Image (cartoon, rainbow, N blue to C red; front, side, top):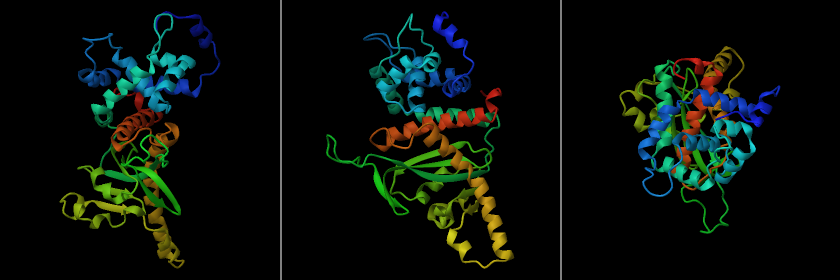
Length: 329
């Protein structure tokens, strides 16, 4: 921001910062802005016709606010005017400039989606984490979660999204998409993402989320039998991986009390203690960033948003662990 205003002086005398302000300060410090701006630059508007385009970093900051706080295009514009913390993160001084409008953000979001930059940001963050030794490799945890979509047909087309599907979990039917992620078994950072319709079985995407360096694979009971599938048995590397898959709950109930049952429970506990790390990643994406429902029609746009959320989740986990103070950040 530019020259200090009376509002800045007033806010600086507060006794306590809000959680939103603390979060934005951390993300402002840890995000490699220069690298992300350089990724957008080749795809950005050249400004030869029409009014001059706004700065890339300013639009990127507005776009990140939108996905972090799960806001609409109009909602994030209003929030910037309403929230001092967001205005400070944007670097806007209302004496000299106003917040970008919702239409400008819409065009920028479409540019990000059409250029596949969400995946580029995610891969750039993971390269940085690998260079600094924050991603250990050697083992992968894979899991999937449902992201619901509107099932109503009361819309202009009179139909549901054709790329979304329904599935049954327990005794409940769900309609939407499924997010599959691969997490580093040592640190919990997300290293791979896939998105499908909700009717696709978890096991179908598992092999795509394995890395060439992986020696161990962790998964819940939904991945039983993975090591017998053709894409695993026919691959020289994947066929040699140690698959530590959780057993079904019924197996424990069928066992008699004794040393064998105790040993079985100990092994399952050890598997679960490692596998729990994938739930931390889902917690950030779904509960902190609020991505419990799809935001757009189709898989591609929502997958781009997932890549951005996964990159942000990795940065947030790095910040919480203190790794953001390293040279990598």
